[in-house]
Length: 228
Image 1 (tube, rainbow, N blue to C red):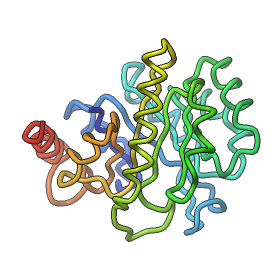
Image 2 (spheres, one colour):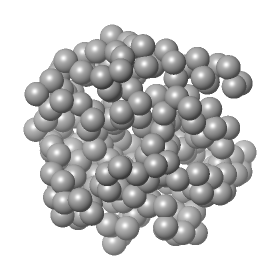
Image 3 (tube, helix red, strand yellow):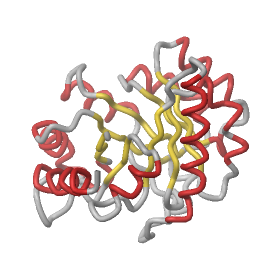
Image 4 (tube, one colour):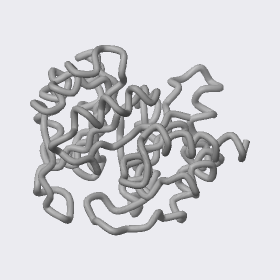
């Protein structure tokens, strides 16, 4: 399973150091949360293409970068993030009117295409797009709303997506990855792995003042090993 730190919980004055620490700990995939101060409920502004370009330059070409666009105009601005150096753009189905065109545009630009959906969004809206998607991200909290707990009720959606992707792969289709984001920590990482999740976004469970990223990652990996 890929463990993908979200740098949203980092001290923004130390983002470069936090990224270095994550890479030194063995992290291969970094998750970048982009909020425009409009789309998410808490009206937070995070960072944009310029910061992402700096992170890409710092980590080099071998670290996988995705950006989770919690913005109103992903369909119009996606190329800025591709140009900044991300490998995967993940956009909200709730915020994009013509998702097939966005997928086509990303693939034409040599970038992977991901879709993220909120807990209340029916997965029937996603299944027709699945054959062309490189990744589907299940939100296990409401985006932008702080202080939330992990929502175990998303299990049914994840398992349905896992079944659909496995059927797709068995027929020679795309190996769409499944990711989860929201309240994931050491205590529930094995649970979501067992649902069929292949990549987990972890913020405060990795980047906190209770231990180094390496120490927290070791605990997470131990939980995965002990529950195989």
